[in-house]
Length: 240
Image 1 (tube, rainbow, N blue to C red):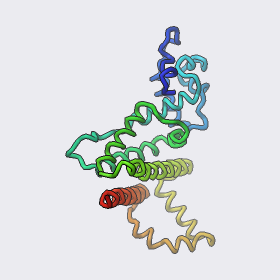
Image 2 (cartoon, helix red, strand yellow):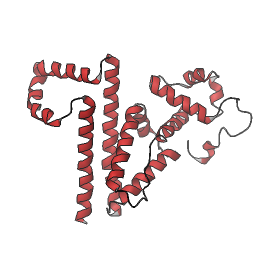
Image 3 (cartoon, rainbow, N blue to C red):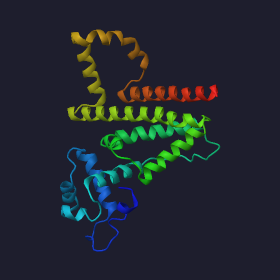
């Protein structure tokens, strides 16, 4: 999608009036949020825009092109720090980037499968990747360790945010709040013979985890895991 020849599509004359690539992409993101990836189609998008499906092909060659546009538009929501700000601590900048990415994955559950499907080289995605790289470089790792550190942090965030998004969708389907769902689920597994022993073994860990709500528990686990990764980066820097 992002190669020059395809990126020029839609700039030629004669395309349907009232449409442009930005509007099509914005509505695509809205539909994906509302109905999910499985129900998304060119026909459904055309109906939402009140145009024919063929009109969309003035701007994109395929549905995949459109999904790449939506994916990059979502990455444009990320708030990025200034990696050259010498007064800023790289650790705090990294925590901020990780939190932004986690929230994005939860906010757009369709994003995680697309991020793994495409090259993801749109301008917003590249801007995010470049800032991440420059922040990690400031930690002082040798060059051969930078990509490994990026993978450790952001593949963790990808996994955490993806599972959290699935969890949120499952809760939404029940009509319960997250805390109600968690309370009912824990009560059920604590009583079932095949799971009760595992729950009993983990009781002290669950109590020590802290947090009065599901949101607090998720935040505590995420923060602690991220701190472990940052501490690992610091330890590798100290090793030289």
